[in-house]
Image (cartoon, rainbow, N blue to C red):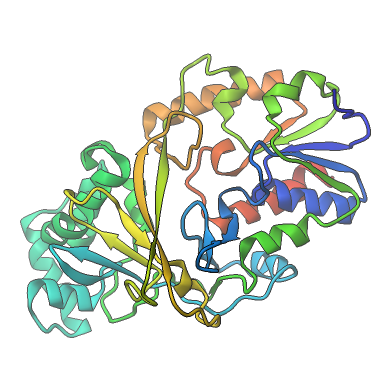
Length: 378
């Protein structure tokens, strides 16, 4: 049995949410922290490692690009790394042809075989909206059609979405599509945020530095639920896992999507010319191909390249990635949250799984810093 009495705080999960809070507690409060991580490594889904055959560093759980408009978050993370200035561009394949994604003026002109200028886009799209527009979009499909019109939606969004979520887009909440930018010019950067890039030494190095403190200890390959009963009841626990599991799914399981990755080494230097290539056609089983060498243009890597095909599927609870959301799931989440507040007053829940929110990295870091200030430091 492990001795939990010597720690001031017990944190569950070694991703950004708990790692940020652990770093703040250790350095700012000079308190002792224990992190319990069920995987073999720190870093959560942001974990990166070196591929043995090619020497290419890759993100084990899908390409992660850091971006934010929050100066506080950027300043905080910059204490642990320097960024390489990488700006994310995504391309998509539809019926064997490559287009810019998100949809921009180049995509529109190539798809419709026109030569619009930026000031002509609104009038052009107005004609599409006259054919179909929803004053009060109630689902993903209606919201997407309002943004890009039916033809562009059918070509670039519908098939990809069906693969990503394995659901009819009419059954998905409208809020999901709001993450997708739409440009009337030739801007190719995926994100608008002024701060973005890949850590020069990649993500695992950030976590190594963040958790390198004598007040922080990490137990890997340790499932919180195997040791929960051994933790003193008065200990403050910060938990970044799925909230429904805390109650053994008594009200039902929250729905998540998960991802499966298939690696392939190819004996050429450059396979697709970009870090991420989407595949919009519904009959192509994978959603995208990652080629991680393009994340670090400052590194000179010759010879073979590594590509990683990404497949989306329903989560059985072992590796949840994306909260599906929607009214039924959100009502279920609120039931668990209400019971949590009554049953476990010393347990703080957060992160993408804990909050059941489709957070990006900067959202998680921002939430973690806020939780530290408002619930722990006070």
